[in-house]
Length: 279
View 1 (cartoon, rainbow, N blue to C red):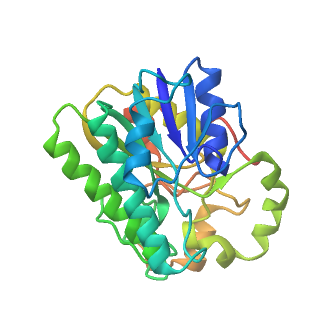
View 2 (cartoon, one colour; view 1 turned 180 degrees about the vertical axis):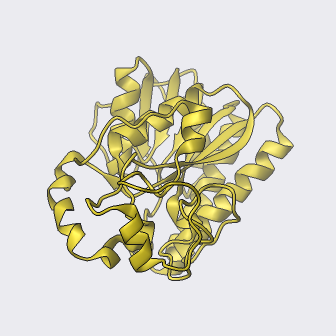
């Protein structure tokens, strides 16, 4: 496929672009910064005209437009910019990208949502553990609120266009291989990573989830948690949960180090199968 990737220069974006190219797809990276000559097009996604222009065809790189879109670009976490700037950037960019995609005839879309919509940093404990996609979103920051509302925008656009597919991937904390050196230190303090139930995802596995989402045939909107198969800890989950979330109901057997951000739905529906672990 010819695939436009917004934010392809970012931490997750680099893994996604590499994976898609290795699997035979033509990829153009739409971002503010990047390497000239590497399928990069500089763009301000807050400018609707630039976005529509890019998605309908980019000279010799994609003169006939695109078959699919992966929207990763965002201010990627709370606290990196003023709340108003984060909300405005993320919401406006996503609106511009999704509506331009529709005008360009693109009906295969994957967007980056966030684990934060599950209620992170869990100052208010989750309703149960492991967490999954079944309970209502609980945004606790302006960043998370923007991600929740981006999902809601996608839902309504899919309602308007029956042939449209938008898959929102609720990525856990994305890690590259070089990040793993500090993981053994997490065991000393269970509270240091309780904010996301000790979760993470390897960038290569996150990229796999994107590719499998693009390959998924069913139209409409859906959302999936994307995390590693394990936690960042060597301590047993039962011990961690008893210490930090003693009053939260536990569903099923959580013994060992398996992820507490449930990836069962992604496994079942998308065929997602994480291959990488810090261990």
